[in-house]
Image 1 (cartoon, rainbow, N blue to C red):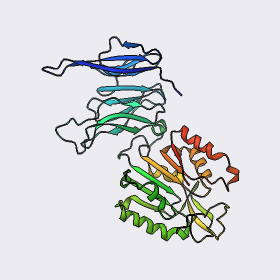
Image 2: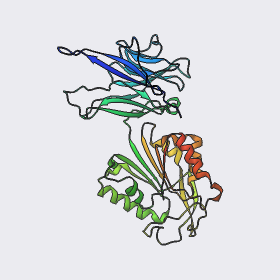
Image 3: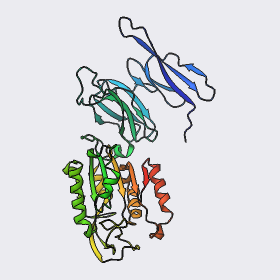
Image 4: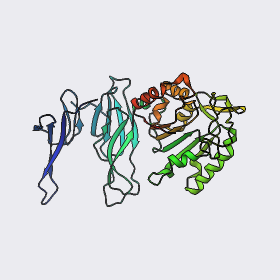
Length: 371
């Protein structure tokens, strides 16, 4: 854990009787002693801490850490560095695009546009812009900035940007706006979508839903369930996708043990105990079902700018699936993983619930246990 020992804040003074005119001063406070210092010669704004007891500050010509980069393309308004491969984030003068630049000392000498600003539903009577103040999160996955947006005035937003996305060919620039996804692995009848996603306080209608179900006996129920949810909650039909296959580590087929009970574990229609592994309730017929490599599927369906909630209840197959996704890196595309563990009948994986959760949390993925 990084312990904060100093805080920086700005003090702005002005005499604005006839026109707007002010100066902004930087101050630092030592947490331990409470001592207050004014940073000399800093009359700009958007100050931040650099490295080795240095500060980053903005003046009328730019926003620099240490010194400007000679020959940098375009009129620079904001320049900020972050210590992961020495990437530099730049906001241009008119606030229309967010760039990341990596100097020649790194892997490549390139400037990449990672997002555009475009006014939407903005009044002509207000400023229409993405303003300054971009900041990296400490893990390097996010940039925080403020902007006007959809008539709401000035708000603070967070955008995903991390090293994995920047170094992979073909993934550097995302042309479309960020989207929200709910991946339901083990959809049964679609009931978990209603329980976990569709709530009064959530913007569920904005989500693209991908429901995975491989139990042949559940197919009529999940089809009708998704149709009902689409109608009842006014979901966009094109945003509700049923994948009639098992979420697995490779594309092909699997032997699937059917649930021998007439109803699910909760007494409701829809089988819950079928599995590709031996389990107390997977005692019915052995059938062949299609499978997909969920890591591949996820990489083809979402991008690093999207918000992805992944619910996993796949009767013991979660261990192989998550291990596979962590090894290949596709797990980083998930923001939230909601999971039911089944180590009670996957004895060879006992103790791995906490291990896999720890790995995901180290990647700043929020993990929620369900069931």
